[in-house]
Length: 298
Image: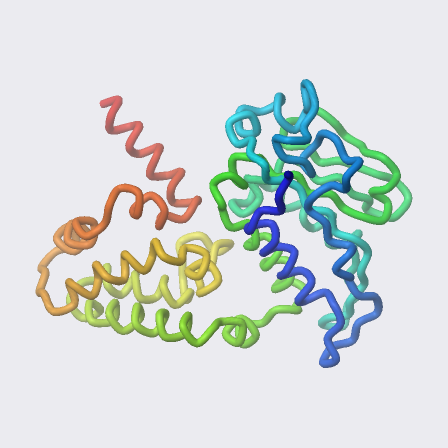
């Protein structure tokens, strides 16, 4: 049967946590659990709300992109978000402003939107519009006057890629998430893990600039792209893969290196190709692929 994948369940949980009732903030209208859906109901056939058991012949959610054809599994690949209205930072935010913000990010092709195929939404509660990365369609049915539909390329769901960064960035932008709250969101195990990574990387600080860069990036204090802040939410999404990197760094902590290449070689020696690939953020991975292609063609 069609399943709700873990990465979309994580988005659902994030939105409900911050857009559902909280006595510490003003809530004009909450986002309720039954307003955030992933799997289509029993009568739903075809489209991104269905998995391989319920798609139909020539289903647009499969045939129009190789990313969907190659990523088809039993998992649904869509998220519906219902009506809400919140007050934060002296301003009101609702489904329409949320939807238009997300569409603007997709149109700008920000790194955290590239797994989104389409958004069907209403900017004003009167007309329905559709942003389609493939440029196939521009509207949808009237039910989207009161809910917004997000379709994700199926290969990103199959790969289990974290889909929370865009939505977390929205919640941060409107002031519903602060750095202090992010810190509170971490489990004790995550706190200890992050502190261990920071301590081990700090050992390298006085020996080579790469150690300083690694430490600042791990703590989310700077990055070459101002729109991409690494911080602990991203570290959490890398999970076990970065734990392998931590182990490799620990083994180097008491060794003395005189150049960057020696450090890089030492870290990579402790990782498998799969662990290296899994630990590379999507924005960096694209650059790595391009560079490898350039070198192989030379």
